[in-house]
Image (cartoon, rainbow, N blue to C red):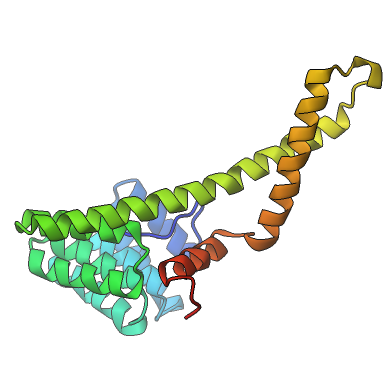
Length: 222
């Protein structure tokens, strides 16, 4: 299932978090009960609705599962993740054609979603459309490499910052510096200079995503 890349989860309320933990522990009925209770506090919260839909997948309850995912799309009709989520559910319940339709809508709304592109490719391949599937796989691979490369740069820059801070605290006496260390310091300084400029442009993954859109649209703003 396509999802937003995060190292943490945000919950709408405490009950939402308890529901998530219950589902993680395999307590499906308890999780559904808590998600329903959480919705009493935030009735139109799409994240709670979607999470309860996932719980219904675990319970193999197709009717209530799709009811939740349909509701999410009603509330956020232009958000690709809602269609990708319902596509995942439809695939789980054996509706391959419906899943393909939803994944196609998801990538129409968010063409750089590598996961949705890949999942669509898998379904097209399953249906025997090998050429179309291969095209989706190529797009997914290209997008993943672009994202991983840019995210890798940010991670490298963060590591460089940590090393620089540490280096500043542990300055060696001038006489201990040899030619190799001087050269290394020069290289690090050049990298930092490039890094500072890069971070001025990209300070978050959302900004990177906007940049990916810019590239995809032929370097034109939409």
